[in-house]
Length: 130
Length: 130
Image 1 (tube, each protein chain N blue to C red):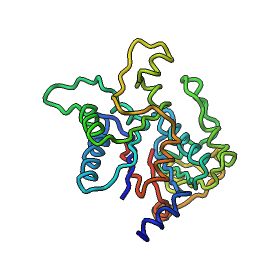
Image 2 (cartoon, rainbow over the protein chains, first blue to last red; image 1 turned 30 degrees about the horizontal axis):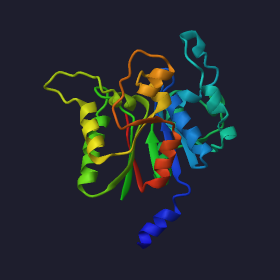
Image 3 (tube, rainbow over the protein chains, first blue to last red; image 1 turned 90 degrees about the vertical axis):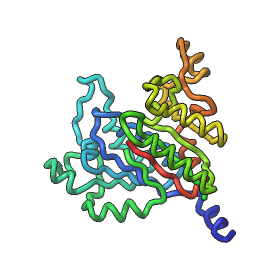
């Protein structure tokens, strides 16, 4: 019963980690991951966004998806702070692999080494991977 | 324990929906509660009841329908993800004046707020990805 009471206590807010591992335009996963993160933030949950592997391409500046009849969602990723999402992390090894720097991205992020990302992600109650 | 499941993968593209089905059965067999099953992203394809695979293959949406009906599970299909992929219930058929509907019974089209609610009400939220 004690355990049950404690779990009731922590029902007010959960720490949710939204992982984006897919690049834009190949699938809609990035957009759907963003939508989920925004809704969770609207409902006053603690939301962290992680851009891992190919997912870092979601954040690259100067995308012109209009020429392939796609919507540009990188603008939304640039305005995450407005939606209450302040914890944004990118995978340092992915940036390095693709020869990208923080200056290439639409938003400021915390660039974290892959081995440290693991424990950071594990500190969340709920992890969802797009 | 109280569980909720998020399903992001589509039949034939991903093992997620069939793994999630077996996981749900195992939970119920062990006496756990399932608060909600949430279909999102490509996972909404599971809820088309009109797929016709060859007779010697599993009909996944029928298998899910049986479990949902037997245990009266709370099932939410993300409305935005469903509409853009052509998963339609009677109400949306009327709203958009379409010539058919195809969604399984005892499931509800609703928003991502239902996913956040499931996060708050459950001890564990398990995601079955793409």
